Amino acid sequence: MAKKLLASVMAFALCLFVSATDMVVKEKNGEDQKINVVDTSETFLRFKILSDSTVELTNESSCRGHESITIPEKVRIEGKVYTVTSIGYKAFYGCSSLTSINIPEGLTSIEYGAFSGCKSLTSIKIPEGVTSIGGSAFERCSSLTSINIPEGLTSIGYHAFEYCRSLTSIIIPEGVTSIGGSAFDGCNRLEPKLLIYDKGTKCYGWIGNKEKCTNVVIPEGVTSIGHSAFRECSSLTSIKIPEGVTSIGDWAFYGCDNLEPKLLIYDKGTKCYGWIGNKEKCTDVVIPKGMTSIGAGAFAECSGLTSINIPESVTSIGETAFWGCSNLDIVIDNSEEKVEVGWDAFKNCKSVKWLKD
Image: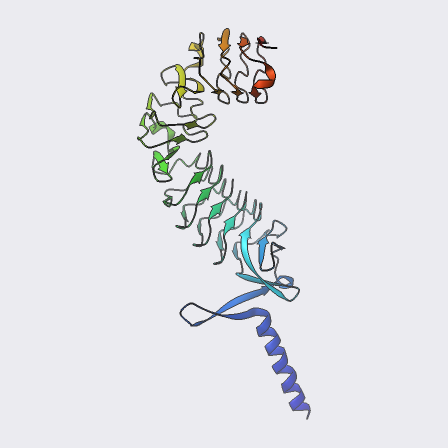
């Protein structure tokens, strides 16, 4: 009797163990697939419930001392099973000892700063289901040499791979429609080239060694140039911008002091990017009539500029547009309430006068 009771208890315990660690699902081909399920009480990883069926791995997880981590595809929280769909905000931020990580199928997003500062991480494979990589997601992963970008990815955030100094190659899928500014800054071992994406309509800018960015022709069909696209490309001496460009990101040509010094007007004469080239030669500027906007940082630090008239057609002046123009008297042919002015647009200017006030 005692033996039968013991056998029953052991069988029950075995069933309990299996139910706590495995579940079986049907594949499309009809075959069974066993999926490991991890109970959150038995792992150092921590999760936040997103919906009735999904969770996000959070930065409450303690990665200290872990060199290799496997993120489970499914977790059990208080008896209910959830799918891990996201690696959350700074989930593994600063995990300096982490060298490898296994990311499960079912994941759809890697959020801001998820692996930022993981300086020992050498490679990572991102599953096919991931559609977005957040800002600074892999920033300063200085040992990262390769990364697999899935075909389904549509967006890469600001500073996503900044200062990944060991990264030698990366293939951007055709479906990517958004790449944030400075996403590849400091990745000097990448093949130096102009990065065009989103079916040839967007120019991210220069990637790889900036010293090799000397002459650039942006192809026809491009309509936008990204934030900080050629920032600090000090060797750039000439650039051709197609007439069809309607958007140039902030600071796109900041530090390109060897470009021909001039006022850059684009989008059929309606937008003023600002001054490009040597700022010391920015002494006399006329903003054409019909202009509707002046970009962020457009004349920042142009200390030799003494006067400028802004036509009534201008309704938007970007942040820090005239910051540091200490000798500048600005005359705006409009009323203050009719013009959208960014923060510190006129900071440290000599004077600003609104004609319609």
